[in-house]
Image 1: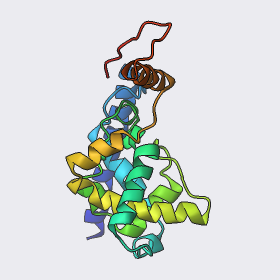
Image 2: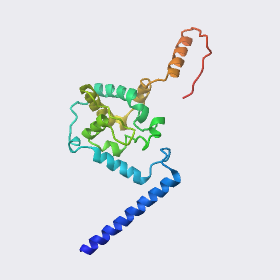
Image 3: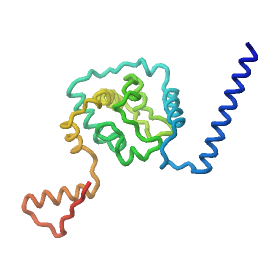
Image 4: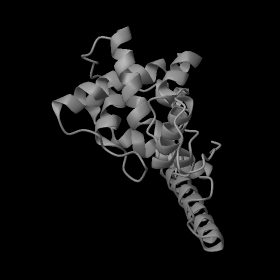
Length: 203
């Protein structure tokens, strides 16, 4: 039995050496560009790292904020203003920032996120995830309350309606160019003239 154990350990060591050698060869051939799609192994490692980063008590922590339409409205506005630039209004991660992170921002409507407990989601919002683009947002009691409300909104993402998405678009941060264009359009609709020709930006 001891011989079988040593044999299996040797096989495992050889496989690990091959994986590492393959990884080094791939890195030397392609570099460490964040423009490449993460490999299956990297995805697996990232998921394991996230699981390992969560403290034991996080999973069982209950959400102290009761869910309600008012809470979802507040959380939806907070998400649109603070989170959507990376995660998108619908949680898909389909944004310029989200898609170009390494690893890319996940689709939070899918089981990998939705199967996390409320406590785990709260911990990630508050503390971030190292070696990813997810920062830590914790720091005060007010932040904690907002984070618990965001947990309710994350649960709501798979059922987000078209009306809710359209409302969120009006709450997304605007660039100076967007604001200038809106001001010009407002003046034009009021019949006011501007010295500069109006420009149309297509998004």
